[in-house]
Image (tube, rainbow, N blue to C red; front, side):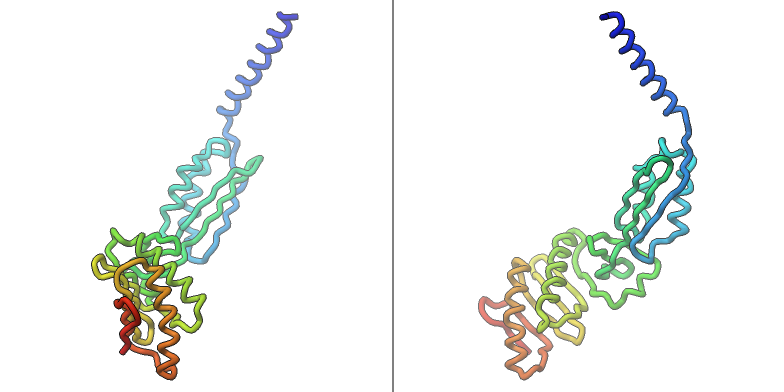
Length: 226
């Protein structure tokens, strides 16, 4: 009985070894590549060129990490997901960057805070400008997202931002389309913006709907308006 069990175990191991070696040696061609993308700016020609350079690797040995890294390097690509679908299909899902602000003369910022430089950056001149040192960009960008969401929630606030500025030692400034400049000063942006959201509607109402050109919040109480 013991010898029979040993023989069965040996046979099973042999089958596994032969199967593993066979799988490693066979090519198993890729039968189809399914590509879907969210957005309109990702170049299909660039994606196709990269994908085609990997097809000879076959379905089993496809370098998914390498393919993902190359696709991620494309200017408009924000996120990439790649998966094998049995028996011979590869599925690629691409998500496009959503530009929300300009940064410098030839760069944009995506909704996730990624800096990128598309060739048609001039087409996005209507986006607000981020005026901040690159070392402080991540910190300032999180505040910018708070601003975006805060403006959506309070309809009585001006909605179109022209610039968003942060400078160490000076704090936060916001420029709105139409000429209004808001100086929030130094401190936690969330708290400063909450104060502005409280005072601004009251000031405009007091001025019979006339929007001020300058709104200075750098005071312990109230604001200077002109």
